Image (cartoon, rainbow, N blue to C red):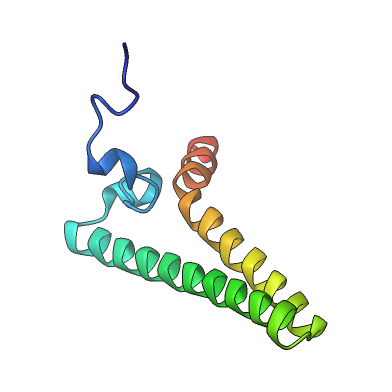
Length: 102
């Protein structure tokens, strides 16, 4: 039996927000740590936005019978999850773009 995470560690899991790829590879350790912190905070904000949207959709759709609030909640969910996806895939995007530029 082969486990997918058998050889991996935490850096494999969070590799998307640990900028050691492309143009960030030449930065110092402190600069990479700052970029990691900024990306992690942005992901947390996007997740909070999605959770707030889910709560707004649930409350608007059931308790208040407010369709505008429910639709606004859907938009917040989509925006938050899209932000998480974009930030998480920045490693791939930068690697492709930086590799094509070389």
